[in-house]
Length: 329
Image (cartoon, rainbow, N blue to C red; front, side, top):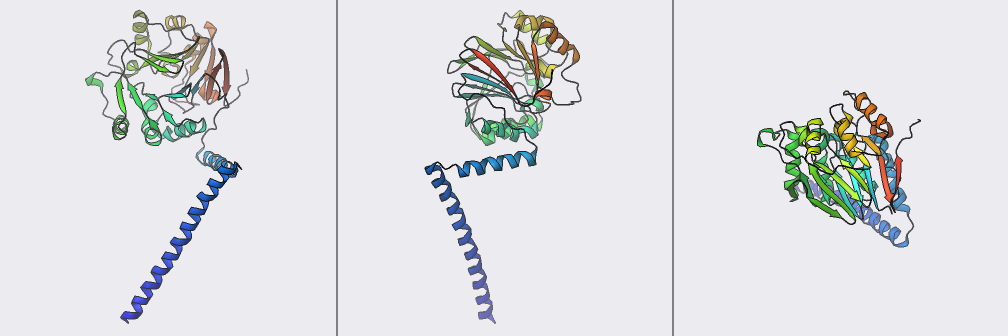
């Protein structure tokens, strides 16, 4: 009986070994065929990969990217992450990511980065520690190389103890990423583009007002990024003498009536305003008061709840606009 049991055990192991050999052969053949396909430039696997991406988008209800000129000097992408913020700036081969939406939006942001050809983030900005801004950043950090993370100063009394904030800091630490506390007037160069830290200019008790405010300049074109900055911080920023003039203004706090005062709007003098907000969001963003201020000023208003992803790209000083969805006037 003992010999028979030994024989059966041997046969079982032999069967498992056979399965392992077959799986190994399939695995090796797959990658060999992929290598041959790339070498001969046949494009079969590229089509296969595109089909997989499309199928994944359908299953997960992810949004397709917007077509834009990859040869543009720079481009700013307002990524539709629902009721939250995420902005990508591409400048002469460099990538800057500002926020990544809620906790469940990290994979969507990663997918967007992949679709537009981003292989690493040169600078990641966490504007302030609310989940609709930093929630997806830990997922992004886990999925792509990040060289440096920039955050605003927070008074010790208001530093959050939320899991979202802890997860973000843990991801930064686990990947040995440089964490830099922003200082007003600090500048970062990205080819011919320049990002300047403008605020916050005071130490606030309200997290929205601690939002890192920055302006990105490329040639004669500029973009002002305001996080969730509200009118108290706007007044202080203007009083500081900061140069806030910009062609494109990302409206503070998703277009809330507590942001984008008349004085601030006139000082920025934007041609275009963008509200990052979710379709049918419970807050009613952007608020009607803000929409009226923007339209009465004469600036064009783009909203992610209506247009989906919004991309502004510039080449030789000419600004082009592309949106995921078409909106009838």
